[in-house]
Length: 156
Image (cartoon, helix red, strand yellow):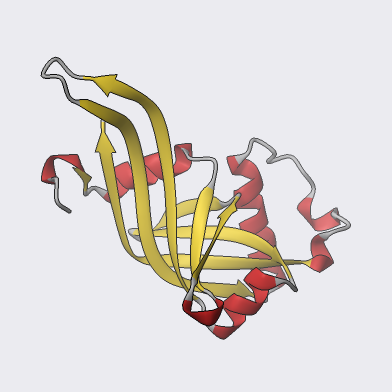
């Protein structure tokens, strides 16, 4: 990182930023050598010192096809607050962000899928929704990404 003073190195602080973000961008190794990035709703948790991301998908479509060929991903989430003018005449953005890499693992066990969906629903204040009786449950696929590398950055 070029600006050391903006680095967020503590995993708990990085997790705090991530929990306040409402959208994550998942970057994949797309077709014809071009990256493919998609904004997603998500859930996350910190377990055993690792950040874990959960997201859902249909069992078909571009994202599904790409992840089944190559499950390596990069994720990014950010919070933009404002542009600020400085006394010295400079201008800067005030923000917080997280970026990480890992592998998107398809969850096949029903208990894991339900758990991940509950984590996602709790993030969006919908923890009371009865996941196991949802009519769409058989049609949704759920992925877990354990972030192997993660970093945070802020300018507050």
